[in-house]
Structures are given as C-alpha cells and as structure tokens.
Image 1 (cartoon, rainbow, N blue to C red):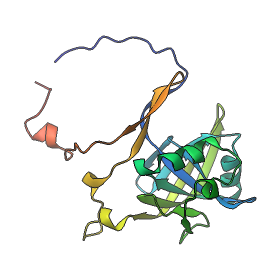
Image 2 (image 1 turned 120 degrees about the vertical axis):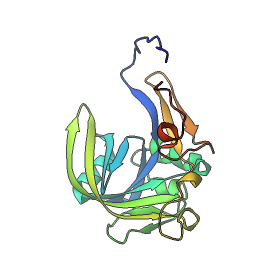
Image 3 (image 1 turned 180 degrees about the horizontal axis):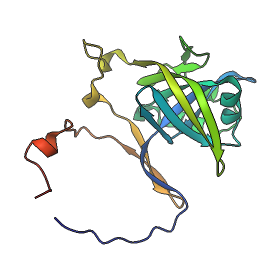
Length: 194
C-alpha cells in the first residue's frame, strides 16, 4: 500500500470524468430541442440531472415536466458541441439530428444516440445557479447491437464521451476498450488490500 501526496485544487468547478448526455425537451419556439450536460447520475428508476438555472432548457423542462436522456458516442462530437454552445437556437435542426418522439413523454429521442431514456420530472430545486431535476425513468431504449438476446445491455460494447477538467480547462475523454466485470479485483486475486 502507498500513500499519495495531495495538493489543494484552486478551482470552483471540478469535472471528474462525467459522461456527456444530450437532454431532449419540448420547446415552445422550435417544437423540440436538446441541450448538452455532463451533470447526471441514475439510481434504479430515477435519474438526476443538473442544468444552468437561467437556460432556455431549464425553463421549458420545468414547464412541461418531462425530458429525454440521450447518450451519444464520440462520432457525434460536433452535435454534442452544437447542443451545448448555442443556447436559444434550434439545436436539433442546426446539428441536423433526426429524432422520434417518446412513447411516454412528449420529448425527442435522438436517433443517432446509442442509449435513450424517457423521463418525467418528480421534483426540481435551484441551488447556486443550477437547477437539479429528479426524474422517473419511464422507458430505456438502446441500439439493437447493444442489447443481448435476454434484453440486457452489452456493457462491454458501450463507448461514451466523458467530461474532465476544472474551471481553467475542460477536455473530452473517451471510454477505451479495456473493461473488467464487477468483482474481478476483489474476488479474482487482484487486490491492493494486502
């Protein structure tokens, strides 16, 4: 066992490898739209996302109380940036992203994304300039090639985009082909516990 020496980070933001998602929503001006965020996590049938409170997407998700989560692959980097950098625009049209409307929500499922969720807002709250949405997941879909015969996800084949950095600089990182099943290290003889 070894102890790592630590230094204090001088930043007001820290992104420690969050997956990037495209949030689809109903839009009063453009009918449907999407925004990029990396602030999310899912537990059971719930999902939590965070978006800037003063954004168009936040206002509309609060109004319609539903949204979609769309997980892009690195082939969609241009689309990811368009959805994240052009607030107030018709980003689905600008990025030329085809979509279908959800089965349980009136929001866009982006066809080129590898996984999508349909979500209903359970509650939301504002804190320090960000709105946090707690959503109930109503449906999960994935590219056919990522679904096993039993309906489970082929986790080892997922390749997502992640956001890493601080207030000075942020970068994209991509999942590599390296993987290991849960329990491999604790029960497979590979442990650093001594």
